[in-house]
Length: 498
Image (cartoon, rainbow, N blue to C red; front, side, top):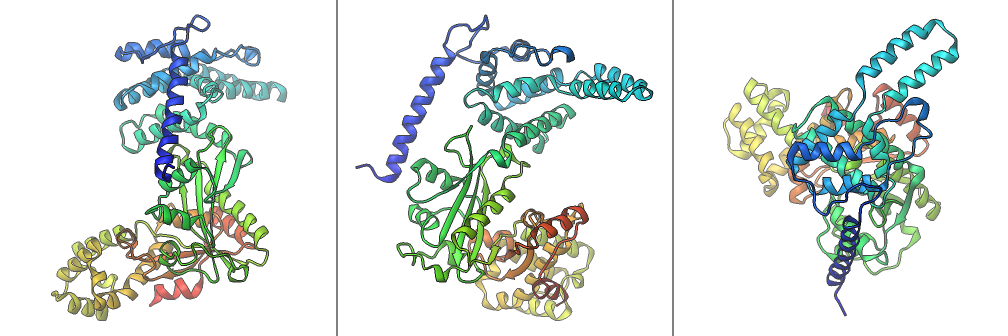
């Protein structure tokens, strides 16, 4: 009998073999409707790209014939997909740049329609509405039709998700920041938001009896607290734990966003008790010991779905599922990492050293304790010593330093979460996510993640975002509309005053 990893590898190999066989057969098929099929991508630089784009990107039908125009053959979509898949990274950049630039909106035609709209302002409302509708139709990029048709072929939606991931990488790496590429990204995001709307998503609970390939993907996609081994994974889907994922009909077997939940007696204050505790691995759940649901990890698995709202809907759906399973449950909270706190603090210390503003961060007494603990001279030398300790995490090896730094780091972390803003919203991305959902900053937890990753990212500190179900809608509206968010007084405001 095959071991579990070997079984996964065997099944994955069979699937890959079948996929390659089907694709090979499709790509070697005879001409369809007079369109040549390629077994290998065209190689001819810009000329080859122009050739294939001219063939597969159909002209935008006229306004009058938009509902009667016959769809292009499916072979166009398959040819585009196959050609793109065979390109190198640099070639993809050139190809997408050409697609977005040469097959986008007809700007000259739009200018003429805009003038017609201005001329029609004094005419009947029906005329104005018709001109506005023509203008709206004219603003449709020519390539949008191709994207729509690609979504209808097998594997097409997944292809477009991956295509957008490439576009996002081009933009973030500054390989291309043209307005046309950004418009292509916006068009893809709009289409994917429609195709992955919450009504089309399926909620699945992942258990140890789930298909092996799903369990394997859950393990691979875990981005917050990496899964160490199969026992670890079994624990995370076993007793006193829940794992849920959103899936979509067009991407079978592919979890889109995954949420891990711990069922506990009280709101957890450290991750070690959740991901490293195996005592209840084979035990039966005692309902009387389940009073709280702790969302300790949420991972988006598809880079191309960035900005498409999935995680907040997943949490809301899971809350309803848990309420149905445990009607008495009243406590819902996250146990969240604070990515970016350590790097923010190091930058702040470097700036304070440069400008001689150490007293802005620590009191005179606190600086004296730090100087004694690290055996450093006062002033810039002490600031630099503290910055290096934060950067290396070496302070965690000293009980004295840990005791000295705890109140300092907790206070600065409270300010980082509450006071540091980006466009008047929380700077920290995890905080921004939960606050948008209507959660409340509830409690900071010292030594909550003692792993090297936890210490490097946030000095081992984690935060609970509490979900008071009767207040989440109001809190979400306050945050999104007025940039106001709720925090638990004793846990945050007091820390910032200490």
